[in-house]
Amino acid sequence: MAIWKDPAPASKPEPARFDPPTHLPDLAAAQAAPVRAVETPARESVIAADLSIEGKIEGAGHVRIAGKFKGDVKVQGNLAIDQGAKVSGSVTAGKVTLAG
Figure 1 (tube, helix red, strand yellow):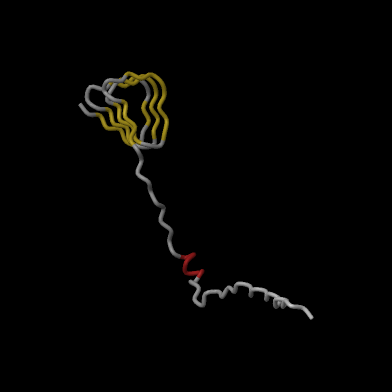
Figure 2 (figure 1 turned 60 degrees about the vertical axis):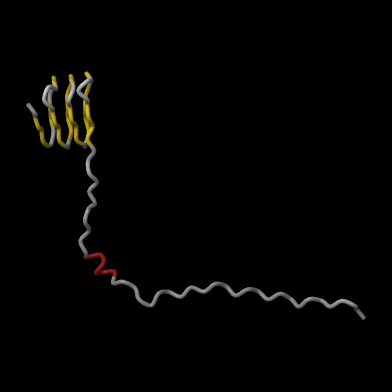
């Protein structure tokens, strides 16, 4: 006769259960809804009044030139040339503003 008692076999835990939601959104309506593009504001790069730069500028953002720039400028955004600034080269931009 044994003086100890064998433990009862451990029962296996029941697997987790996943119940799908009872209300699903109408997929056809969600696909038909118009989608708006989120625009991020374009940043402006600045060539300060006390700078002289030679080279090429290309990009999608905005550019403000307050100093001296020698070279071509090609931006999809706006180009602002401040009063007293000098630009030597070809300019292509969505909008060009000359001050002064």
